[in-house]
Length: 292
Ligand SMILES: Cc1cc2nc3c(=O)[nH]c(=O)nc-3n(C[C@H](O)[C@H](O)[C@H](O)COP(=O)(O)OP(=O)(O)OC[C@H]3O[C@@H](n4cnc5c(N)ncnc54)[C@H](O)[C@@H]3O)c2cc1C
Image (cartoon, rainbow, N blue to C red; front, side, top):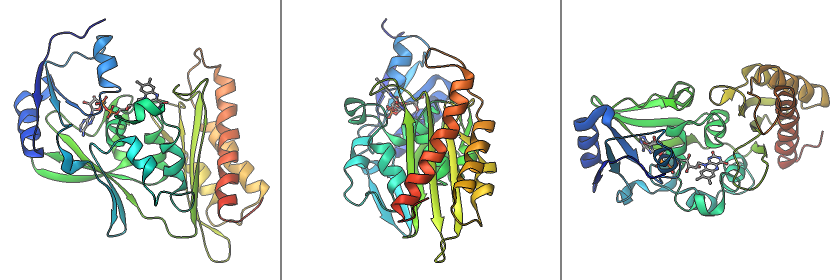
């Protein structure tokens, strides 16, 4: 199908984009990589009257670390994150893993992390990773820019804290210390498919090997990405062991509330949630030199 008719506005500055979004309110949508919005328009699941294209806002294409924060601008493509030389398998391993598995290589050339978080698909990969890594979002609204913790940003399926007339400018991730590693585990039917189930894990250890902090989240396990705080509590303060991993995996399987579809039954997906959390924990610990 072809999309319903719409007006198109190409913004040349964040101020211009914001002015157009304020002018048209609920009738307008931001166009970033278009990898979710354009298919939705073609299926007429979305019928915006006005598109505000932000692809010329090159000042928002950065992926950089400063002041202890990784900042990813609104038009930084997934491929740029994947190519960033310092996003290696160490402290950035969670983001590194996702940047190599989200969608497919063609989609990653134009799709953006910020767009994916704004889209907030329940099976999306970036929302889950952002929850586990404790990201924040910078949103520009009428009263200026505000910082929204990711737990508050991801409101419900395809719904975020970005209100009518607003724009998300940047995602921020705290720089993990050297005793931090993560893992993203995803089961997909084929490359480029959305997750049947997926788990994001990020762990920090104390000098004596005790788990100091843990971030655990699931994709395709609820109305939007699900943070498994029960699993995080089962891990923090403990020395890594098979029992502790099992407790976290059980908590994840219990909390997972997937829907049955062509990708599998509820029971299968709940079981996968636990299996993937356990795998992710083992891989993150392995990256820290800890074998369990
Ligand atoms: C074949 C295919 C396979 C895919 N597989 C996966 C997958 O496995 N996992 C996965 O997670 N995703 C997948 N996707 C989705 C893809 O990752 C999208 O790129 C992503 O969801 C949206 O990013 P975008 O920049 O393309 O956003 P767009 O499509 O441009 O926008 C998406 C939504 O977010 C809004 N938006 C975008 N940027 C902003 C902003 N700065 N401020 C406010 N609102 C904004 C738009 O208005 C729109 O409502 C797939 C897509 C395709 C086409």
